[in-house]
Length: 125
Image 1 (cartoon, rainbow, N blue to C red):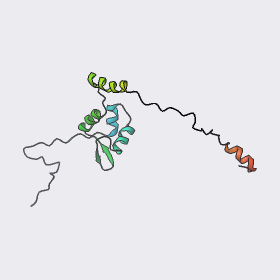
Image 2 (cartoon, helix red, strand yellow):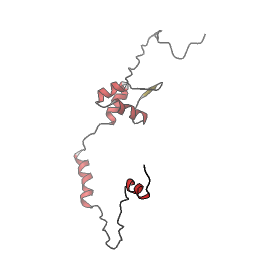
Image 3 (cartoon, rainbow, N blue to C red):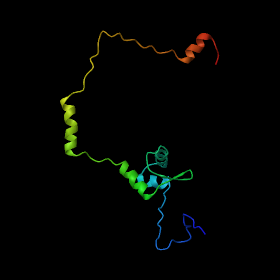
Image 4 (cartoon, helix red, strand yellow):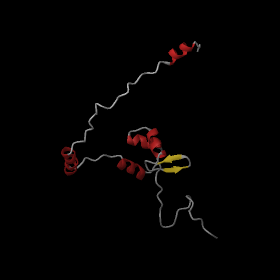
């Protein structure tokens, strides 16, 4: 008789214990990150953070949580990198576009309010 590819949970596999990962709901992840559950669900829906989908629900493992934290952390720039990034900006100032006084400028006029237009035609609202 053929054995199933995935052993049932009630029958332990001989010689090896399979540790299943703990799955966290978005509310748990939000509590750890200090943000809202809406933010966690929105980022998962837009596929900006790693997640597991069980049915229509988002679930997160400990590895997912660690990856989300790594993705959103900011590291300080090294002194050499900061100096290199600032040097070109100091050497070459941004090109300025001289405004040409000869170019005609159109004067904008505000549209009259809707109430004023209705009374102009004598309609009652």
